[in-house]
Image 1 (cartoon, helix red, strand yellow):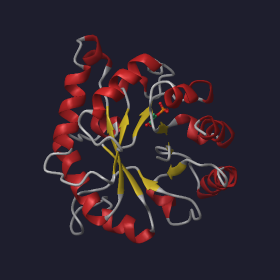
Image 2 (cartoon, protein in one colour):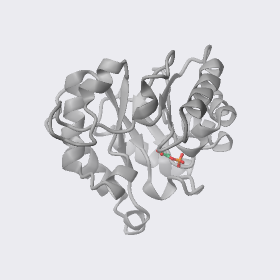
Image 3 (cartoon, helix red, strand yellow):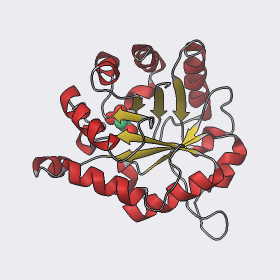
Length: 234
Ligand code: PEP
């Protein structure tokens, strides 16, 4: 099984020129790596970035029509995009994404043939209340409701409190959650970790926590640091 390392650029960078430079630097550095490396830039840059696997950060579940501001899975597929992140905690927090809308998006992405990076994870409060496993189970079961074929699903365990905070999840706690998530998917399903991953901590998630890769936010905006993370998974 290949490790999956995805870079989520979120709403960065500010210009096409910077996006191209960052992409080119990453592309150059991943030529001989064994992992599947996927760059997820803002949609706007997707059509100009070529020569390496691309992912979108979101989709809408309808195929076309009067849905101002939305982008469909079919449009992304047509552009040659291979992956889509669905259910990221920032979408759940700021854009009203629910387990139900996550489920609709997953079904549409699968129908169109996109590979999915399905994000699940508990908030700090939920962890403090001892609800981590309950939350993970609910997000997975509802997100995958009526989904029969999960071959194109990759699950990202992203504790919300670890995202963008510098407060990464411990290897032990990550292992516990990954082992728990494994009960709801196939033995060969890729489960990756995300949350303040840096080159100093990245290798341990793969070598000790049993993650099959990483979802990297902030650190993916620095080509040198991102490439160190990619190398740590080799
Ligand atoms: C993310 O955006 O999915 C993420 C994990 O961000 P960061 O690496 O910055 O915590």
